[in-house]
Image (cartoon, rainbow, N blue to C red; front, side, top):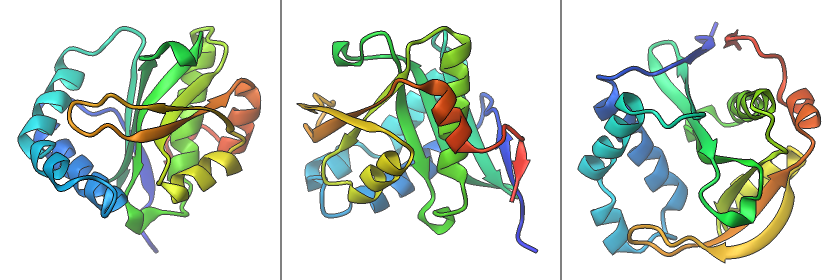
Length: 187
């Protein structure tokens, strides 16, 4: 039997391992899309600093959850206050990544459900996120989860200015229903 997946709230001290996992998935996801300069600049050390900040100085109202497969990272979600006015009164999923080896196992659905429950408890009107326009797999997933495409915009990013599409979910109970149960361990 394969190892079950479990939810985990990461702690200070995990920043290097999480940054390495994030970088691995980010490079796999955007291979052939991200300019070489951005791949080099947005490397491990830069990500370690960002993860250290998220773990040691969490933003008010933020959610950070990791999914483990046994002892290994399988995915993560970081959500909080919206960073762009186009999201209106919605919360924003800033990061949602799943290891390609674990695609199709319900991890993305569970993480979206956690974010929806989080924002519902905060009284948000919905949630939104931005997806790189060339990330067709993610777009298919978000549309299957009931996301409604919003405006296209350019992510100003620190190095790479990607063409993005906003996706919105304004019916949080419907998103929660699509995401499956809120169990902390699942197969």
